[in-house]
Image (cartoon, rainbow, N blue to C red; front, side, top):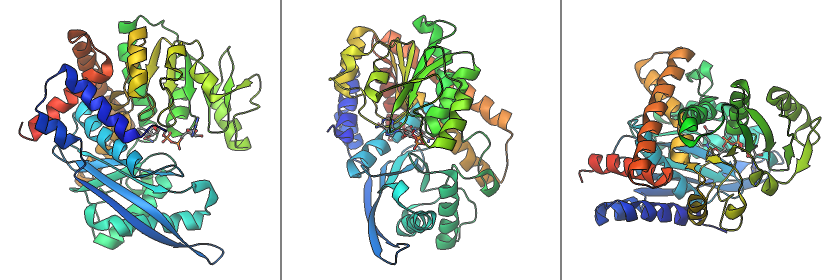
Amino acid sequence: MNNPFENALKQLRRASDIHKFPDDLIERLSHPNRELRISIPVKMDDGSLMVFEGYRVQHNNARGPYKGGIRYHKDTDINEVKALAFWMTLKCAVANIPMGGGKGGITLDPKALSKRELESLSRGWVRGMADVLGPKKDVPAPDVNTTPEIMGWMSDEFEKASGDMTRATFTGKPISLGGSEGRGAATGLGGFYVFNNLRTEYSLPEKCSVAIQGFGNVGSNAAEIFSAEGHKVIATSDSKSAILKEDGIDTKELTVYKAKNGKLEGFPGSKTITNEELLLLPCDVLVPAALENQITEKNADRVKAKLILELANGPITPEADEILFSKGIPVVPDILANSGGVIVSTFEWEQNLKNEHWSESEVLEKLRSILCEQSGAIHQKSVELKTDLRRAAFILAISRIAKAMGY
Ligand code: NAD
């Protein structure tokens, strides 16, 4: 199994090979500032006690408070959280927002817990971490399997533990509890803005065929936006299976179908395929929107998409990056493509601190403007340096972090 933190460090070295940064800076970025592991005891519904392991990694805060989501997954471990925290530092620098990088998680299968158990666990994570969190210290958000409702519980628990009433410590909250307009769809929508800004640079057709791995928060929002903008979503998947419908999936109907049946399989008119087959479909745009390490040296040479838009974090290994680059398949990297979530989270934090509530159109216009500017700058850098978009994004981000660290 690929270690995501090792992959993140390989990406760092790959970028610093073509742009000479001070060795000391690369060494410092190779180590998070702080790693925390806590035990969270939960009284289960059957009266037994279970102890879960929770994490927070604070990678770098040179540009602002640590910022990053909390993941609930059975495979989550400290190496995954370290990698995700590292990518957050770079992502916030790419977006040029005043935040550093952090990430959190709990190892668990959330489907195996009742709602009461999940709430108790989420509140326990906050009590264990409260000392290192705060609007000017560390501002968590949702990630895989963590929802606005969970952010609401966490924000409430933090208020009790700290007395801080700003509600600016957790983002991705429900709107009624201080959340921002536009946060729910921000990652998918941001990815679309980036794609749209770069589409003609890579000579893609006006109406593209799109395959999306993962139909969760990010993937389903992306699917709806691509469809609404006239593109054809031909395939998507969840952890159980993938479906293909070459004449295009009605994504709104699929959302209703999934909510009713708890699966994608059997959607009228579709054919069931495997997640691996989805990644290798001939299409204009492939959107990984699930987990890490999906495209590796084992399948990269069989990818037939014309462009890959990374909405998941770390779906492509460094070895696969080399193969895709040599095949001329552009990869829009996660630290740019999925930065819409953290950008709108930062707007939420700012609104909470100023006690304001911005309209959806104001939020989306600010988001679009940042992503057009930064995707344009990264594309230009990749052309100047004759390199891929990931290395260009790393170089831009590290240059900004270096400045804040006094290099
Ligand atoms: P989610 O839990 O809402 O959805 C994850 C989806 O992936 C689900 O449909 C799940 O069934 C599917 N999945 C899980 N394992 C799979 C597998 N092995 N093969 C195929 N599909 C699988 O999570 P999300 O918030 O949509 O996050 C998805 C990705 O986007 C993650 O990499 C996350 O870090 C990244 N991301 C999320 C946000 C955000 O705002 N939520 C922001 C930036 C990046």
